[in-house]
Image 1 (cartoon, rainbow, N blue to C red):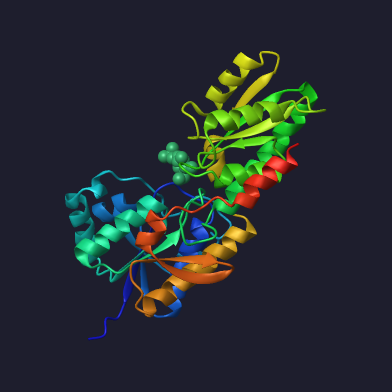
Image 2: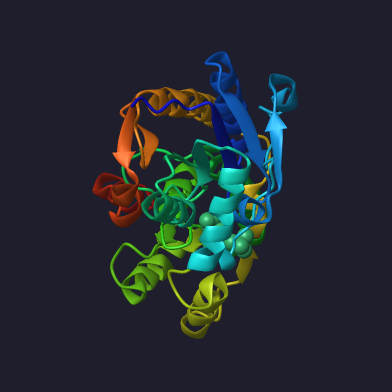
Length: 327
Ligand code: F6P
């Protein structure tokens, strides 16, 4: 028997990312064009458990493509990790007559979606939405480009004051377990070094960073430190450097949640729009438990299991480029 999707639910979960609104807009409008009703679920899985659901029409997603954050709000839910929590979520799905779920988020969001699919046979499609860009199977995640540009803009500003005062700035960058933001921002901002979890030991990277900071004619420098590359983050790195080189005027800047905010870049808006439309297409093609991503500019379907479990590599040439260019 043919299984027709009449109503979908859409939610954003985990850390917000610029471009999530563009994705909600695209999912909603592409669904409506295909005669599918859309129910927006507030506060991710928490809202799904609690039945915080509202119907979305084309007007409800008007004027949001340029807005950061997520109009549906987001949350991280411990209760949803339990079988009881997922049962409550499924009860909402049944009550609201939701035939399929589109979830926008990172690996935690996808893990939850997979469990719902396995336990209750709910058709789910994931859209990669995280500033960390740490999902395997897609070249980019929604929000990553905007966050990267925000970081570069901040580092450029720190460079102005750093060179004026001849100081070494240690700048802490988000990324959870991944160094994509840190490494790429370091290249783009012309930083002296990056300390990321994926490369060498932190001790080796530190040695390199200390050397680069005052090498040759340089008497100021910028080192980007991935938040979890070392316990204590950029503050710890500054402490270590100060012990070896008390003469360096080190300063620490933690960019923090600034990195998650702001109007999405054109790249993120386009990515989110394409992925949102493709998610509806995928559902109509009876795709299930996949992430819709982009590889070499083409839309791809990747099993959620792979997107979550496989580790996306840092490109060696990028790491090399940073080492070569920071002489
Ligand atoms: O996953 C996105 C992210 O911003 C990570 O880079 C960071 O480690 C984490 O979320 C911070 O989470 P929270 O906003 O809950 O402090």
